[in-house]
Each structure stands twice: as C-alpha cells, then as structure tokens.
Length: 416
Image (cartoon, rainbow, N blue to C red):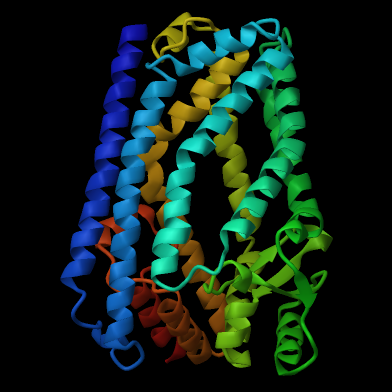
C-alpha cells in the first residue's frame, strides 16, 4: 500500500508541476503574440506603450512563476521522499520527548520556517526585481526586513498557541479529534476576522479616517442607499510599498471597515471610487463573504476527516518518506501533499470566484453609475499593468476575476 501511495504521489506531483509549467508557457506565448496591438474595445483608452508594458510585466511574472513551480516540486520531494521531515523529527527528538507537544510544535515550526526560507529568493526577485523594473515597487530593503520581522512575530504569537491546541486535540484518545480541531479552526477564523482590522493591520500600515469632502459625501450616500453600516472609512498608506491601487472591506460584524489605498484615491475621481466601492459592497450584500466561509468550512471538514482516517495508517507515513509516525509528522505531510492532489480543482474555484465578481458588478450597476465603474476598471487595468489579452485556458484555470474584455463588455450591456 505504501508503494502505491508513493507512485500516486509522484504521478500527481509530476502532473501538477507539468500543468503549472504548461499553463504559464501558454500565457507567455499568448500575451507575447498579442503584444503589438491593443484590443479594439480598449484602443481608445489604453495606449499601445501601456499595453506592451502590461504584456512584458505579465511575461516576467509568469517566467518567475515557472521557476517557482520547479523549486516547489523539488522542495516537496526533499521534505517527503527525500527524508527531511523524518530527519527533522529525529533531530528534535534529541531535545524533546518524541511525540510530545514540544516535539511536535518544534517539528512543524521548522517545516514552516524552511518553506518560508525556500520561498524568500522568489519574493525578493518579485519585489526588488520585477516590481522595481516596471516601476511599481516603493518598498526599501529596510522596510522589507521590518515587515518580515513583524510578520514573523505576529505569526508566532497567533500561530503557536493554535498549533499547540491542535496537536493537543490530535493527541486525545478520541477518534473524533478531527471534529474538535475543525470546530477550533472555525472559531479561530471568526475571531481573527473580528480582531484583524483593529489589532493586526495597523502594525503594517497607517490608517487615516477619510477627510470630509466630495468623496466622503458620496460614500456616505452610497452606504445609506445600500443600508450598510461600518466602523469607519479609512485611507491606507499603500504607496509606502507599491504604486498598485486597491480598495477592500475587512473585518466582520460591527468591526467592518472600508479601506481605500491612497494610490487609488489619488488616481480615480470620486464618482469612480464610489462605483468601485459599490462593487465591494456587493460582495457583502450578496453574502459572498459568508458563502466563502461556509465553503471553506465544508472543505476543511472533509480534509480533516480524511486526515483522521489516515493518521493511524503506517502506509500513509511510509509512502511519503516518514518512518516514525506521529501527529505532527502526519499534519506536516498532509499540509504539504494535499494541495498537489487538489490542484486540478483550481478551475472550479476560479469559476466560482468569477461568478461572484460578475454578481458584485451587477450590484454596483444597480447602485452606482456603470460608466464610472467601467472608467475606474480601465484605469486600474492601466495603472496595475493587467494584461488585456490573457490566454483563455490560463485565465479559466487561475483567474479569480473575469478577463478585462469580458468584464467591460458585460458592464456596457448592463448600461444599455
């Protein structure tokens, strides 16, 4: 049985890696083939130079993504069949009792640390290479290191207690431990959504209440029309790190906040910002957040149940390169390996997400000027160097938002 799992794992990893590389190559070839002409629907609003920059930016990101896919596959093989998890487990057993909470926590933290370390060069290449080359990066190396230290401390402060609690529940002499872990995870997620806006986000960015003026008045009227209450409307200093613009809602219940990047407000006119916010309001009003949480809860329930069935099977460990079974090793293997088996479900999740985006656009059309939303989106495509000519298959597989041409066309139909 362990040999069958090994071969199934190798075949799945090979197929997922090959698919990642093939899709990225398709995207590169398709975008480059359409680099010399702006699509007709954008010819009057997007200059050729900007279109070409977006094409080059997309190509650069996908080439880096191809390298990341190869590094990711190699790292997975080293962690699993290469014996790194087994070696780490034995190494920590010299300091802590094997199978203890301390041993399991140390093992998992070391796996997470090594994963982050392996991904660090690609992150640096993306920020200080690609983003800087195309004029988007505003982050200094010093700010990057400060952010990295903060993220690490926050992850340890919030993650270690959760990790210890999960391992403790897994160690209970109860076959239903996975159900208790699932309930803990749900409770933790809800609490984090409530405290994240007020306690965590301000550690990384400055949030300033939006000053009175035309934009504030428009937003107030929009919220009144939609019957939406929030704990505040804030400007975020996103320009400290990037020139990309965005807007989002964060929090849950009474802790909901509306956040606008300062870069967004500096580039869009108040009616355009209003239309973008109407789209974001649509996600809340159409219960997309709650539906997403429910879907995530269902998926986590199924996966934890599966882990509950595998955790006491010797072939599960042996088939993935671990010869000393244990709760922490099982969790590490599961977190590393399962995403490869779920990779080919990406088109379904992307399709679901794009449908939600179209619904939010329809909501925005009903509560704001669709022409203003179109203008705002075109400006965002231009400023963020989003490709207007993605490969259809790559887009269907990965894109959480509809392609630019399809989205603008639907908004034009809604306006008429």
